[in-house]
Length: 459
Ligand SMILES: Cc1ncc(COP(=O)(O)O)c(CNc2cccc(C(=O)O)c2)c1O
Image (tube, rainbow, N blue to C red):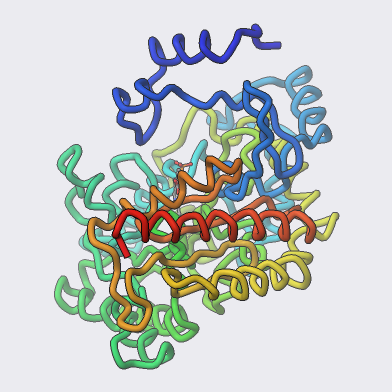
């Protein structure tokens, strides 16, 4: 058990030693961290005893909810038996074999092979190396360039951050690396103009075709996208987008990659977002919901044609010390088995997902500065706007979002501000009563937010 100290002592030690991700350290240390000490179901508790509703499932990852002792029991048993061995030198172990078999069962048809990593970023970097190796083996080594999207998010490694379209990341570290280009995102609210959503979906997909023709199809290795852009603010493409993307990739002989790190393992009500949107990638990357965040693990799923091509190339010189780590694999197996056998994914599709979407839309449509209310399954969002009628956004994109998010935090509700998009992705086990509690609390916060907007003369 971690040594018990009071909040002030922990804050002081954290400020003295701990560098946090995506953080302005000086600013954080002025206010001090919030010490999260335990969690259960969809709730967190901090070191001051506050009970907090986690509307974000950690970082979009705790799909099965907190406090599952069956998962911690599995971790202990596996650790006591085989805490670690690698899968490099013609060795394997039961935990990773059982997980691989289960993943082939829950994956869409034709995905029977997985490569293991420790995170979503490592899954993305693995995919980048895989697609380039694939074209080498096919005798088309000049097909190296990958297409991503502006405001897409694919992690923080040099490859993942380059493939992502977050310019504030590119500015730090001279990114993107060569061989990665971007197209505009399928954000209908901002770019749809006078098109119907269906027309816009096709038009946005055609931006990819334009980029292919600009660079040259003989140079393009793959197109990579999240079924729904998560960290970019839950950008849900029109229904016509992904089928057209797939058609274009097939026409120009380009691999189609889905980054399912957020959308995977039940978030949309399907096992994977690709199924919800009706497209078949050649490769897809996962992490987060694979283990529900209980231990770090990621997996890259490849279809049978990609698997056989990579195999034909002999050694694929890539992998990690912890690829297929026994304890992470055992916990992921227990997690995925529970998501399936307890009907958690099915319930998102048939019951709690539709309920959340209905409550989310009917509640937030009442607010003057909320528009583009959207969501699928248990991933939902809305955009804070200055003027709904004209779709005018607020100045200084992101400032208003943080102001709104802080009101949620002050009311012990965790939601995420991605720019001026307010997003939520709770554990998939959230009950209807907890949805009602979350929505009612958020509605009170939104009323306070709009009061503050007016008081500050911002609207
Ligand atoms: C689609 C996608 N791909 C890759 C990654 C990288 O995964 P790792 O972090 O495990 O390397 C992600 C991660 N997504 C992510 C990670 C951390 C914070 C937030 C946020 O929205 O604040 C989102 C992601 O959402």
